[in-house]
Image 1 (cartoon, rainbow, N blue to C red):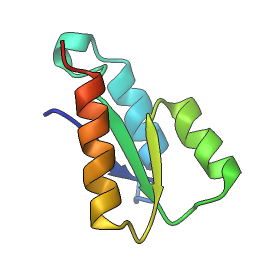
Image 2: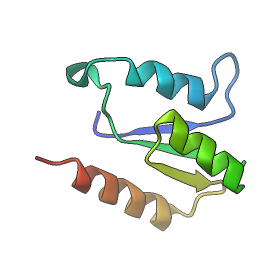
Image 3: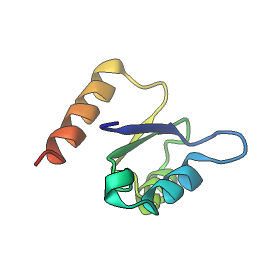
Image 4: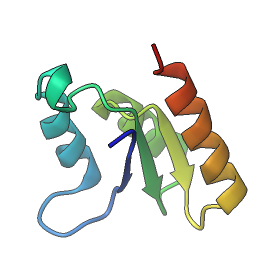
Length: 81
């Protein structure tokens, strides 16, 4: 995959825990994949928590499709060799 899109509020394992587990992987197994948090929690505290967990972008729901596409293109473009 080129990018990880994850909701924050999920059963059993939230998006923060998911990304922390992904970040433990070596780069060749996806540990450095660009990641975007999609969440209904749009406050500054939630943004800071998403960034601390390793997300590069935090988008509040409902997400505008153009904003999501732009965020994906920007993140993938920054991670190309």
